[in-house]
Amino acid sequence: MTETPGGARPRPASAFKKGDGTMNKILRNLKLAKKLLIGPVAVSLFLLLLAAGTYHGMTSQKAAMDDIYNNRFQGYQNSSEISRSIANVHASLYKVVSWAGANYESAKVEALGKEQKAALEKNIAFVQGLQKSDRVTPEEKKLYDATLAQLKAYQEPAVGLLDMVAADVNGAALFMTISDDKYQELGKTLSNLMALENRLSKENYEGSIRDSNRLLSVFAVVLAVVILLAVAVNLIMARLISKPVKESVEVIKKVAEGDLTQDIRVLSRDEIGELAESVNAMRKKMGEAVGQSMAISSVLSDSSSQQAASIEETSASLDEMASMTKQNAENTTAANHLMITVREAIE
Image (tube, rainbow, N blue to C red; front, side, top):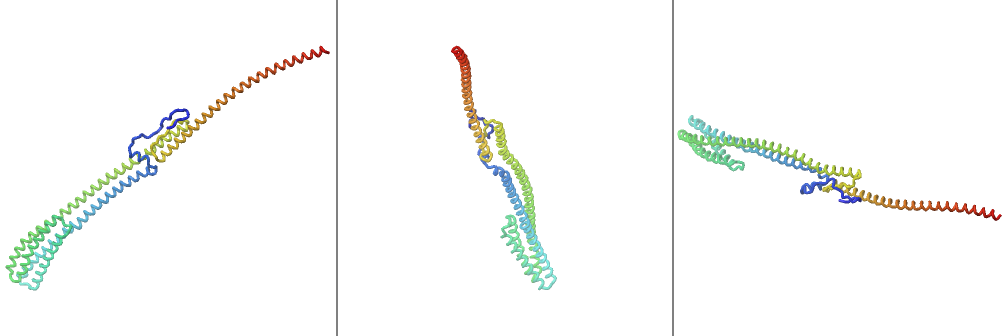
């Protein structure tokens, strides 16, 4: 703060309170353009965060749908295909036995038997391939292991039946009984496998629904936070900008009215701080100019007083001179009268 020519110390008309913290100090020292960008940038960052969360949620949804379609649905189809194929094989075994008992053409009976052997081999290879898939869950693998073991156990009497049916129908019927038992066990395992696929599909679907609801909740919360943050940031920025501007305007008004004791103390280093420093420099210059004017006025006043005294002395001297001139005139008149009298006397 500076002193005015009159000697009075100026009082601070406006100032930011010190100790606001490092963050407030950083915000104060930012340029106005950067302050105005803080709100949009913060909102943009939160929108990016929201977009990232949405993308993550959508990715999870896609993964769930992909698992339902490519794994669970495919697994259910595989189980259904195995069950259907084995059911056809088992029905064909009955057909082979009935054809052999009815003395049907041996070539057709043999061809039908070969088809069933090939179908069994194909199913065994198919289950072995499913066991090696990296998309199979531990529960599925356990059931596939059981299916493969039971399928091989079913294959043994079925092949024995097909090999024996041409020579001994009664012996083939014994193998058929064993095949029935193995088929029932295999059917239960396949039913359990399909039930597992249904359960996993339902769990994935319910998990997908929960993730969707959670995503909507998070979206609503983040959106509310973004709105509140935008309002708060804008209010803070408006206060940081408008408060020093208002205080500077008040001081400028008082300075314009002639009160040069005001001073602006703005802690920011932005354009407003530069304006405040310029106003303070202007006020200081005005104070110095007023001080110089007062000094010149004092000198002029002293000179005027001295000149007035000299004029008074001169006036008194002139009055005295006038009196003396008057006296001299009277003396001259008297002398003139005297001379006239003398002259008359001489004459």
